[in-house]
Image (cartoon, rainbow, N blue to C red; front, side, top):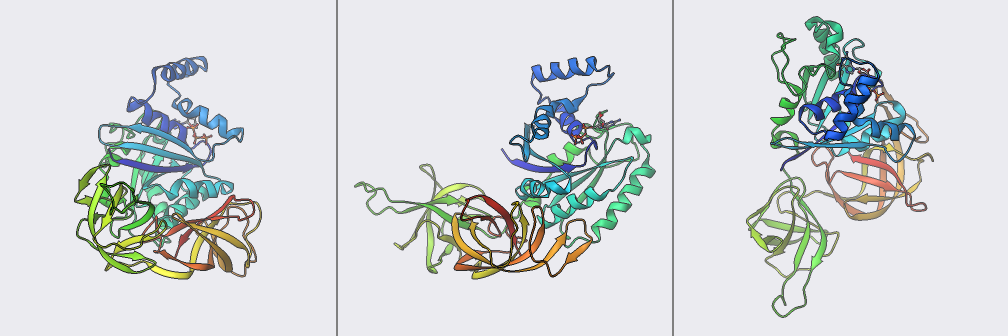
Length: 415
Ligand SMILES: Nc1nc2c(ncn2[C@@H]2O[C@H](COP(=O)(O)OP(=O)(O)OP(=O)(O)O)[C@@H](O)[C@H]2O)c(=O)[nH]1
């Protein structure tokens, strides 16, 4: 079943927990004991409604105590899709968590409290959605019940948000505005009668009809070889299979390919999934490939289509989100982990720091602090095969590892 990962980030009390709880409740994804606990606690607190924010309370409590949870993941399914909601707090000190949550998401929900409208955190959240090329963004204007379901309020927020949209550099992003009340359930899973002026879909209806082709970057296939399979048995004497996952596009039997870095040419002979043969390996599937020619392919090599090569270089510039309490400085040495390859890299220069609220750039920066986002140029001690992040999310991104502590200290998106 298709899996859709959605990033959410919001500021305190805009109703994110209630919205997620409402989705879980209306899709019947809550367990009976959880539901009973919500009913009981809501009653004890004297509410005449169910407090759905309690559905994600366990996660919230953990986060407040500072235990383990950086990004909480919530799972539910409908008949059509499986969903993963990556839930992060929206404050500036959580920028790195937002980046982590959003970097693997295909869609995102930006929540706005109808009474407050567009606030600073809305800017930051939208900026990260742009930086990470999230294709489908839902702007959910919540608490509509508290503004008398007013079309005027909705239109004003929509107009303010559209001003933000004029600042973004990623124009392919689809933005959908939905007026909701998470508490009352208006336009969350079910379409509401309270806002007859709104002609669009309810939030979940919108997510349900998102087409794979629209939200995933489909195009250029990249196949990093994770493992070379050479069974030394009589039956499979000449067998050499290359196991890995196809990223970004499909590969088919008969495709003319090139193996990097050797640039040897061949053709795809067979594609196996377990012991079944397939004509095509679609994007994100894990398969074993065999080639027509007997050539030398090792773990860490990449199989790509002949007419569609990535950049092969020892230098690149990337937008980096710095995640460590020690500064990143020019001259600093880190390990770039790009796919399964690890290469030693040196920070050549910090080009500029980017203010994540769309207030511009800062030049002449001497170091990056935790949660900073900046354009950084790296020099590597051997070439890697990369794409621009805008064209290929997997092959255009990497993590930075501190060679001493082995900690992940940053995430990067190649420009
Ligand atoms: N009237 C009304 N109240 C809402 C709505 N959505 C949320 N609330 C209330 O707003 C308050 C905050 O909601 P939460 O869901 O806890 O907000 P949150 O954004 O998850 O807050 P944090 O977890 O603290 O970040 C609660 O009292 C909710 O009952 C809504 O659509 N209408």
